[in-house]
Amino acid sequence: MRTSFSNLTVSAASATVSLQRTSMIMASLLLSFSACAADLSQLSNKDANSGLKAALEQGANAALGKLGAADGFLGNDKVKIPLPSILEKAKPLLKLSGQSKQLDELVIAMNRAAESAVPMAKPLLLDAIKSMSVTDAKNILTGGDTSVTDFFRQKTSTALGSKFSPIVKGVTDKVGLANKYNTVMGKAQKMGAVPENEATVESYVSGRAVDALYTMIAEEEKKIRQDPIGTGSKIIGKVFGLLK
Image 1 (cartoon, rainbow, N blue to C red):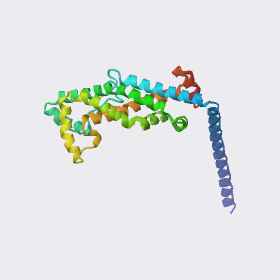
Image 2 (cartoon, rainbow, N blue to C red):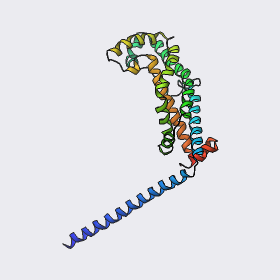
Image 3 (cartoon, rainbow, N blue to C red):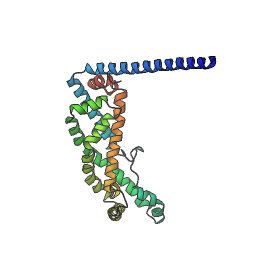
């Protein structure tokens, strides 16, 4: 009985220590949240709005500058556009049939097309920034590391795809393999054999270009959040510095 009582005493003591630790952790988290809220409350609505818009514009411009340059896609493995999945699977057979050069030309054309299309995103991104609502601002301030990117994706993804498609088509149509692909895949897509986003080269490339743009904006956003002072903008440093 003494042994059982002793075990119960030890268990109760351990539970008490565990509860105390949990309480301390919760108190620490609440204090951190309160401190963050207090810091944010120091900002005027004007400053918060100006800082957010400046960060949005800086991140967007940096991403556009990198992707819209020569080799912005082709020279960056993070965003380089590969062959559509069906062509990738058929690549060995196509090479055996003497179409290796055509495959290489298509990859180059797709990435050059994306580099040409991406700068067209700027007006849409700037319009999204101008239309930022109070709710949008709150979500960006209190969201995670990619809340800026999430904002752009929500506001511009559909419009960007439509904007890119004709530009991409103008470039890729010059490649014979792209035209053959569109003819075959167009028929296959009607039968449900291929996904809609791979039914044409232009739809495939436009989708990949849009995703690449958000990928690069996310990278720029993380840089701003990690070192807001390093952006060289006082208002960005003021707003995002309080969030660190």
